[in-house]
Amino acid sequence: MNLTRLEDLDLQNKRVLIREDFNVPLDKGMITSDVRIQAALPTIQYALKKGAAVILLSHLDRPAEGTVTPELSLAPIATRLQELLGQPVRFIVNWLDGFEISPGEVVLCENVRFQTGEKKNDPTLAKKIAKLGDIFVMDAFATAHRSEASTVGVAQFSPQVCAGLLLMSELKALSLALENPARPLLAIFSCTRVFGRSIFI
Image: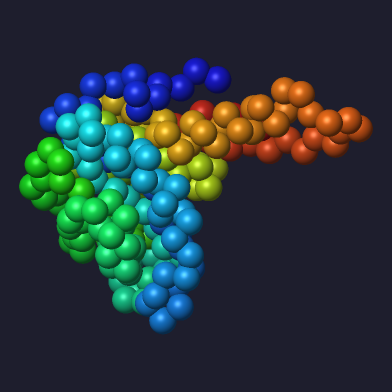
């Protein structure tokens, strides 16, 4: 497996577009577990430390495509992320046509599944998403198997693509588990996709 890693690229003054998995459980708008948000912190903090402007994408649940569903907004995630990072996180609802962002800033875009064409990996949508960043970082292992505009499509149109710290740690953990397993052994192989390439695990 030969993937470009986040650490391999120069992030200084770059708009780094990171696909995370903030699909957290909510109860009446309150986050009941922030484990997935905390897992994403090392990638976000690394990009900030290296002088990047950080743009975050994620889905939340399964809204009807093209429909804004207020109870599935990522607004609560922005609030919690701001607390964990200890710095402002700008939440943008209408983000698809672009926005200004400076190095050191963090922007969280509204639920990507509110966009028509996300689940069908529509190339027009994928191109618009790709224009937001100079570098696309895939860091959402749990959604890497889905051929969607914000996971696979965007990588096809981005100037540079790489794997985030969380994604690499997940892949490493899976590889280590298969290197010297306890026996007797039952192996169940699955296939995930990273940047449109199949990886068997």
